Image 1 (cartoon, rainbow, N blue to C red):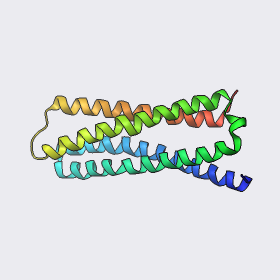
Image 2: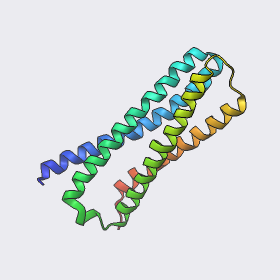
Image 3: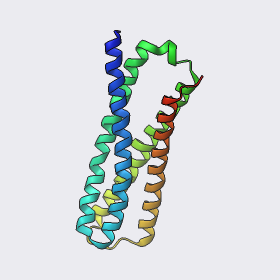
Image 4: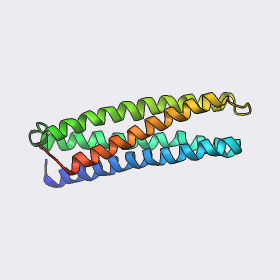
Length: 159
């Protein structure tokens, strides 16, 4: 693999991480806006809820870029990074991000969408709102923390 091909894969990798981390941050902000808006104006809240659902596509696209470009870079530098501790920790964190973001976050989004779709005109009990808000916030903050850790590991590559 040529150096130019490796650098192209690296650029795609950085774009994927940035896209996924940025989408996670926007998801967190948008969910808080949705929660506040739905309490006062259900129609505005439903629009934000639909936007939340569409944000998941960007998380998936970012993850796909990360995985494809990461595999391409590993073909070139497997012996260099594969044995290093920081890289192994990064791979573990990436697995947790996949489970947390594309697993737990997606399940919560589906539950919220169903709750809103079924009961768009009915008042949803406050306990349900508090529960889903708490779960969303925990999943989103964990996701953001994991991205900060990945960025940190990628900058301070230690052995």
